[in-house]
Length: 224
Image 1 (tube, rainbow, N blue to C red):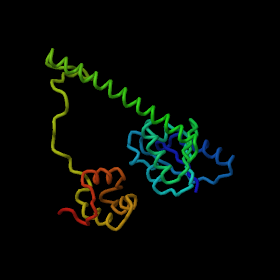
Image 2 (cartoon, helix red, strand yellow):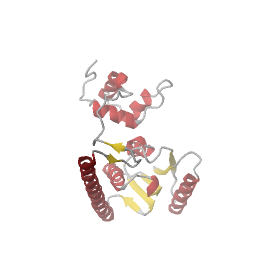
Image 3 (tube, rainbow, N blue to C red):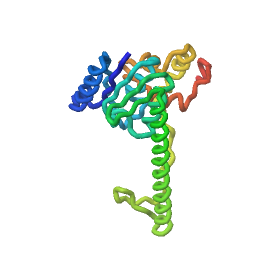
Image 4 (cartoon, rainbow, N blue to C red):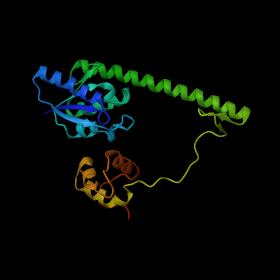
């Protein structure tokens, strides 16, 4: 199966441009494309976007074409994460602009190595800038008793005040979720079963957040 992944807001002209780019390549290669459209903002995590569902549902040797890297992932680290998931399943993932292909070739291994190094460097620089900024703020608090944030407001202590842990939307459904998991249902299937008119659509991200706080260990019901 061959897929074309495009992302943008409803009515976005760029979505049509992405479709045309993928269609042109598909026509040149003699491929029939099934388009998957995503309207979720790039600010949302990978797990909350349609590309996550597509990677999960695609099979070995399937091909996923993406017109633009900027419409595919938020940064280098996320690009690597999605690319590795595709490789683990034997899915061929190709980004057309810039030209990046994730398959079992030596070229792909070289790309992953370079992108991995780039990602490490990004994290190092961010960590360094954060450390320097934190130290500067500590010095200002020690000297003046406060520092000013980006809005010009006075801040007298570092860090946010701890509040009551937010109740997750899916907590009332924990027994149902554990039951579904014990029966071997996939996360995508569970989200579809939990979605209804009252609660609306349950996203993969919401389910992941629930399981991160309340991990499933094989029991149908861990607690009442």
